[in-house]
Length: 272
Image 1 (tube, rainbow, N blue to C red):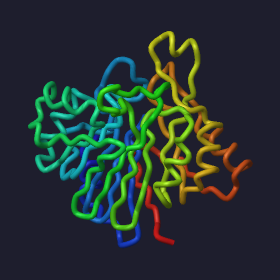
Image 2: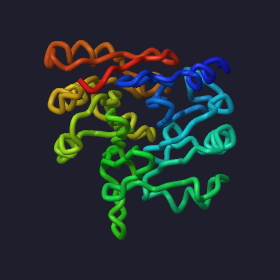
Image 3: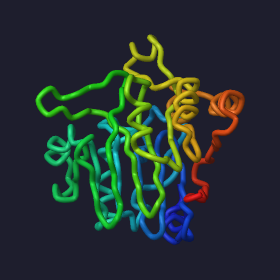
Image 4: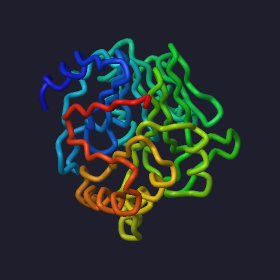
């Protein structure tokens, strides 16, 4: 872990028509569009179950505008880390599923006015940026019967003509593909690939789409680029992302994909 990565992220300003992203292990990404910096599903707690250490200290991530968590598990909403991120970036706003907003405002030592809830019908909008929620099945669709809000979501984030979808933890369910197509052209999709099994579920490891299912989803939605994620941090929940790439290239050769090395800047040209 070095402060240098945080400095590089803070100082990078992508040119017009370009976005930069950094993969931060598991499902974590930092995305930069212009001067706006968006973090999603950062998992930076150095817990014993990890086989890869955190790539950066949370206090070294400064100048962040938005911090998104797709659901209330440690590797997506890292409760121990979020207060440190809040202090390091005092202007940052935290985006969570509306399902969890009340509990997180009560339980996190972060001023409640910095926490915002996003639901399927209640987007977050600010300065031309728009974040909408798409339900995620982890492994099932968990929904509050009274409010209709979902416990796990993915986010479609749009800003300055660049749109990306981050699925969080998600299995395929009826309606997911149509929701994504209704979101319009996606420049990037970030999809989990670790799959699921009876043994893992018995051990409390809730599953995701398989790499084959992720390939088929990307093949049907046809984003500008697809990036596999959630495959490299827990010993009991790993997958080889090359299998995803190989299957995609054979079955949907016209859909671009990339493996993004953790901690390295990856630039994306969009709008063509």
